[in-house]
Length: 376
Image 1 (cartoon, one colour):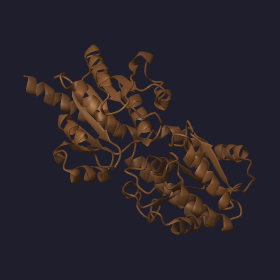
Image 2 (cartoon, helix red, strand yellow):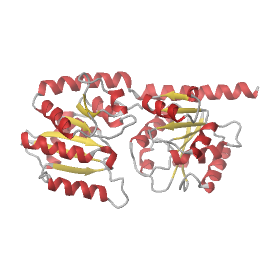
Image 3 (cartoon, rainbow, N blue to C red):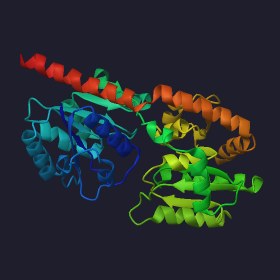
Image 4 (cartoon, rainbow, N blue to C red):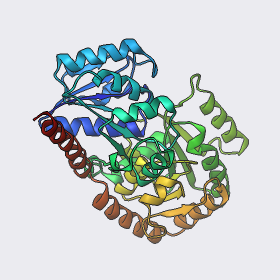
């Protein structure tokens, strides 16, 4: 099958990592896969499985970039694309325009977030054959907006490649992390991964860290992720807060990491302090690495974590409860080992990459069958 994925995202977040994994798996299964990206997209470096000619560079400025829509339409005709799959809201109208006159091409949309859509997107959804929601929370948000029939929505949770973690050596990676961070032997590591933006709750993570640090003198804290703000102002704010909380030598900012598995394998406890989360890809990754997870009870986290069985859940914004859960795990090695083992089993049973790709392929083939039946 000939498939064109579209993503105007320039920063590599959870949705973009999902797309890279899906594209790689589809390509390995023999599909002819193309990806349209803007220049400078970090996603380009994650698409090594594709021939360079299959990565198309377009402007993709915004929802009203007619020039990009016309160029997409030309690429659809040139490569005889059967499925156009869009992943970012501002790309939905461009993708819809690109397939408008291509009767043999079908539009699939993946919705990764919970934010409300506007009227332009509602019109776009009418042209989509299927909308994939990455969680039941996203499905509920779409149904509540009444912008498309519920029958058009298919829930396909994100999947991850567990081989990334199987190839890792936790003991070696912990030693390496300690050396890089210049930490003494016996230090405890608490970490979080995600773009540096307010909704990810890094301020709450730091305030919880201050409480933990007063009790556990050997605890250190790692924040991994690129700054999502234009001039790096959010990281600057977090660094100032780190100093104000007396954590200057206890908190370590790594910036964007090309591969998170080594860091996750090095941690004692993984924390997600998000204020909203449609799925929670890094939560699943931390669970796949066998880490004990403490997460705020966002919509996505509640779907992934079975409370106190595969992870700990606390109220969103309650950094004191966050700190208490982290402390309980740091003080009980057996408990965090047991929780991590259960989390690992749970993640591997429910969130495998093959399962996600199988379900996405099924959507593609079902819509192709609809196309063939109507044309006969």
